[in-house]
Image (cartoon, rainbow, N blue to C red; front, top):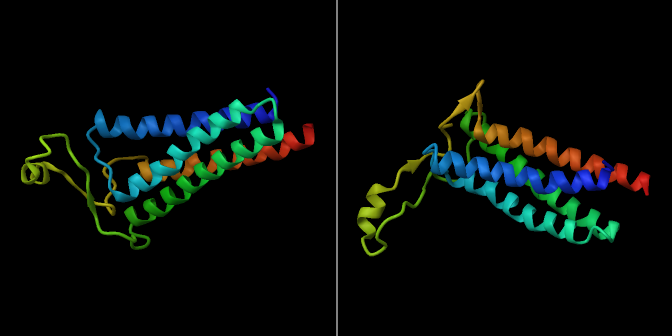
Length: 161
């Protein structure tokens, strides 16, 4: 596979998989996101349509590469936020926000019950780890590596042209 198609593929698949994992951990695993968790999702949400535009413009390689690069940049931003969040969780530095709550489903008219049923999710506590790495840490590692891979593939694609 040539470099530009692989860059486009990574720019689409990585945010879809990471968002899928985030939503699965939330709705299947019961891990409610904190405010900084949401911050990490937003760049991935932006990367998906950018990558789709890259696919839609694949007959124009320069335009396609631009949108794949923008998607890669968004993925990298999510990774940077993830690394920052992981540092907050590990106590390396203090976060920028107070802990937040995650809204739950329920009757919107009964706001008090909804507030009382909402789990309080702390930004400075990792709710889950694997080998000492939190979900934010994994996002930082995977997103950062993917963004660098997309950038390297785009540089390589210019040499192939």
